[in-house]
Amino acid sequence: MLTIFPGMFSAYLQEGTLGRAVKRGLVDINLVDIRDFAAGPHKSTDDRPYGGGDGMVMTPEPIYQALKSVDRADRSLVVLLSPQGETFDQPIAWELSGWDQLIFACGRYEGVDERIRLACIDRELSIGDYILSGGELCAMVVMDAVARLIPGVLGGKRSNLEDSFEDGLLEYPQYTRPRVFQGKEVPSVLLSGDHEKIRLWRRSEALKRTLDRRPDLLRKAKLTSEDEELLVKLRKNM
Ligand code: 4HQ
Image (cartoon, rainbow, N blue to C red):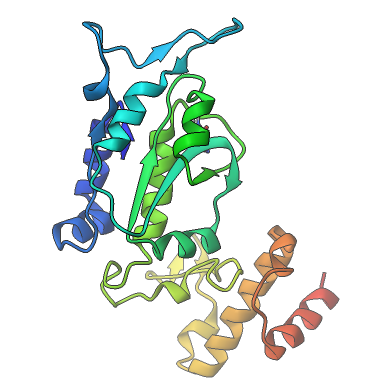
């Protein structure tokens, strides 16, 4: 992580799934403070934009030197987070998980000098159409999604193939105890013990949710002939 705020990553990397993965040595995350590579008494990492206008631009030399300081693996990719990048999604997460080393450049201010983008960046990614205050949170989003795909990170209990989006569909509704909460009962099929019936119900609910909320996802989804039959029934009920 190339950043002027390495502290932003520390807390996240100590907790939960990613914290455990780091402790077990399944992922190795190296925080590089761009400011350590800034020159002058003020250690400045930004400057005024040529041509004028509001805001500041991340100055190229400190990022360039920070990147040069990284011990590069043979198969290593430099990723820049910016709203101008291609939109990050689960298939991109799988692609990134195939690299031995990902180097995330986190921009602040109005963004990085264009020559850094041209000379150093292999892939520019956006996490969505909104503006955050810096690339750090965006890099953490990508880092988390990719780390979950590394064998062993999820501990084998849950496979990521069961996750939402791995087959391109939204997830079915989940229930746990109590059986009645605020007057609402758990669907009786889930208490039936009939595993085939439960599997079909869940698949149908996943398809229904996707049809209702994200019909755009159905075009790219991996659907079986059983799914197609369930969809025909669901569309009749709409
Ligand atoms: N920023 N997806 C501005 C983002 C962003 C996004 C990162 C804010 C870069 C300079 N990055 N900095 N959305 O909003 O990736």
